[in-house]
Length: 115
Image (cartoon, rainbow, N blue to C red; front, side, top):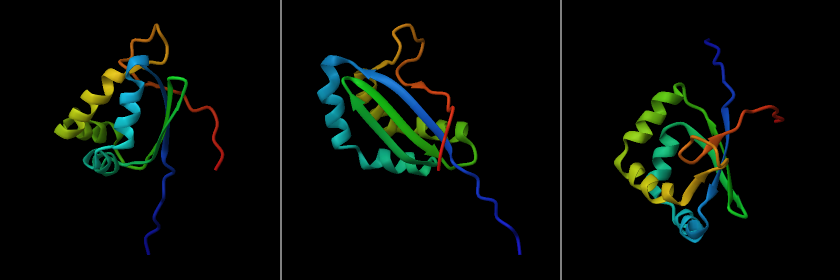
């Protein structure tokens, strides 16, 4: 009998800001998320994806359960409908820090976790 090793998921935390004049649009887009985008996200090994908002600050958390994050990200970026979704949501976002070189979301370093 072969023993199967279950790897814990890789966790991601990110922050961004909403453009004030785009807040309502962004929230509406996420009330009606395109099902194809959700399917692609799941197919690319992302689970437990949550976005929170408070006073124009976005916090996101997700877990990656796949084997090759970079390859799965390339797969997601190659999907035409996902790129259209990003074209809708991207202009609503700003990087969390004003001096950041990020286009929008900035990734946190994980410093502690409790299951």
